[in-house]
Image (cartoon, rainbow, N blue to C red; front, side, top):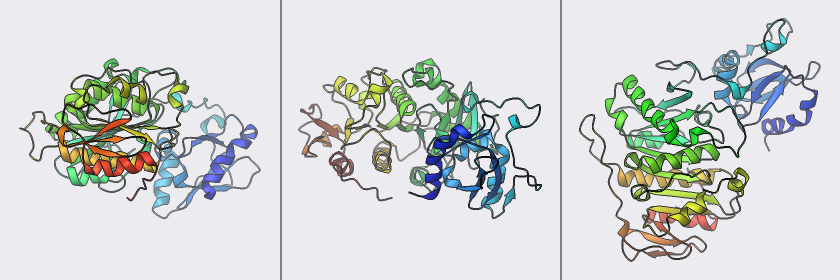
Length: 423
């Protein structure tokens, strides 16, 4: 285990000795840790102290949630930006004094808790999120990273247990990184969000999870705003591919797709719950990969009856374009393997469904239908694949629909536990 990771994991052991007014920093693993003080920002990381008389320790930048750092501690984030350019920034005032939180200063109010944080101020081209533009719709914040040139579609990345998807994408650089191929190959913009949820009870479903309660309309309002800012009017009607994972991320993605089938290119989901929207004749035609962990108990922990297994059972006789992606021995934990399969699935389906020629200016894009008759059936227990007899055929026991040879290759390795990410 890397030293930075060991430090973050060990911090919880000594939290009882940390004063309540200490600085709260969030790690890239999602854990929040209290520090007595922040001392300096170096090219290698952030130097902090756990107590007034403790020796400084350094946490590498990749072990911190930098998006949250920018929102909650902009002065530290500004030091981070300078440090990444080679500077060492003293945050102790040059007088041997440590930098302390506002609540530690005489007469200062107690800072807001992270879950009560307000939406960031709107700006046309955000200085807070380099490389991204942002817009606020009600209590939701949306962020977009456009490709170069004309935008032909949108990849909506919907992650997290409690609506803070952007933190996973904040450091993504256009045209590179994990999702950059969607920008360079297909001219798609990356889009994500912060839902600013205040509660943390996983058994209570927030309104955000259900598009009919406002979050769906907010997506389209945000797209219109981005279309205006980028001076690309077609963006307002662009088709959308979706990757959804974790509690709120997967739920919102699934429910959004059921209610907006005409706009959705394809969907890849992982081990979600609160899949409450009823599948429609249109939504079952969306190519949808529903991955789930064979040994996962997350839906039961959330007290949700509508999850991957239950909705697949619900549509098993409806000649769907949905694919059962049971992860061999999976425990419902997002991983490189899961994201790799999701990425390959979405790339293949965007290739199959996104028209080569643009729609009339300002008009909707007509997505190409899948030819179900050219697909196959795969057995999720054995990985065995057989040619589909005809487009109207329903899969047999333990079988699922597989749209093409590319998906077959990755799916088979996924369900038997042999898939290894290659890029």
